[in-house]
Length: 344
Ligand code: ASP
Image 1 (tube, rainbow, N blue to C red):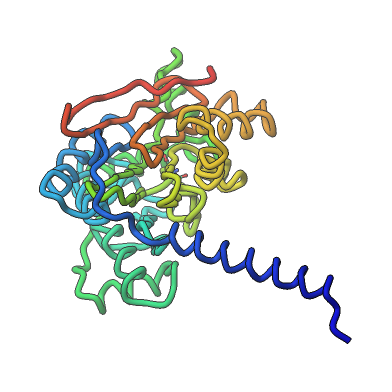
Image 2: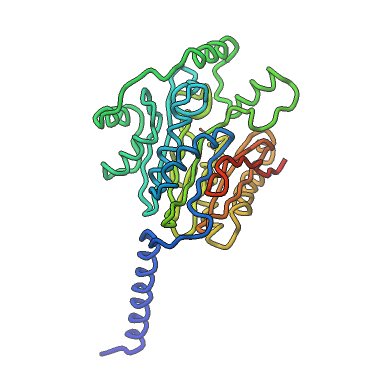
């Protein structure tokens, strides 16, 4: 027998599903070319973000895509041998091997990542190839290297004399102990006075850009924690932890002790909080507070910073410790450096 109630319920449900499908489909579609006042814009973590933003700006200011901007922007610290926390010249793991982590995400929710990749100067570009040329999201270790070589990337030695020297120095005293915050302890040994947070060896570049079509992309790349266990992966190449982009809402990225960011799925959390109406800074603060609330003692001695941008191009950041900085670049100013607010 025909059951009217059941029919209404079912039709309402399918109508709802249809409507929902339409909305989520629309959210996934790149926005039309509507110019928003302060767009395009690019923001990135730490002082070295200024130089990275400048190259991203070359793409954005010519009407280029946010995805190309973030890739080309982070090439700058990846290639800079003086930067010992990203790409070429990065400090090695405890076995003396430079292993790189990177991920990239576009406005359609596509993403790609490489984990513990060795011998390739621009892991971000390999991550982009994973996104564009494979049905996968992540490639790790030897498999990532094999894929990179197949894609035509050059195999090179990434351990510079300066980083090798620093590692050998570390070896003299280092006992094998995978202490999460080893860098801070080393710094404190070297200089017992309280050091500002940005002198700790936690320096990943996370970059978020919105192009003139209003589309958002992000990139995150690092050599990870200095003298880490071989094979250790932090937050940086993990979508949702080190980076997350939702073209409807905004994007977020992180830097600092990756383990705590992974435990709290930090960047995804920040974007979801912005979806609920939090400003970028308030969302970053809430994500930091989750870490502090769960592990107040650990949090006293570690740095974690989040950086976020919303669909309107409003941005903000928050860190556990003082010293976190981020760089902002748009048509008004190309080399703005902002001191992130912090809990301590
Ligand atoms: N988040 C990175 C990691 O844990 C390190 C950093 O940002 O300094 O590998």
